[in-house]
Image (tube, rainbow, N blue to C red; front, side):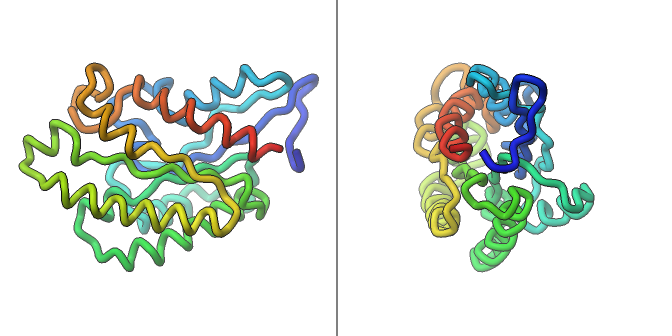
Length: 214
């Protein structure tokens, strides 16, 4: 557990969460955001304690806007034990050229690794959920097949990019497609996940956090 900081009898983990509305938890309480739920779940690991996550995320952010948000946060040489990255849905939603995502995601991953003490094994990527399966998409008359195909392409690229670097990948997209039609799994806006869905993401991430920490 290189770089972990001791706090009396426990190891205090520093956690940085990078993303967009899915990370900041649009339409849910702060305690229901998936990074916050992940930090809480880590309290059950003997000898470990995760500090409240440092979240750099905003609803509507694309990869470029997240990059700027990181600059604005002025983290300087701040170092973290765990860094999560979930970004790209707004690139797709706005119809941006996929090449932009590929280029900017690679750059963001490099920044994430830098914040993780230059150790890719302390970085965890999360797949983009499929908003095309939500009632919002139906109401807006969006094409669910097109959204699914494009998000699969985004996720395939992100997964390969991460794993090639030695980072971890958490797949939640397929679950999101099933959960979007289940009671209680979406927030009141019928688009973003509820705290209940975010809880499933946090649980899926726990084993990867444990692997990351050795």
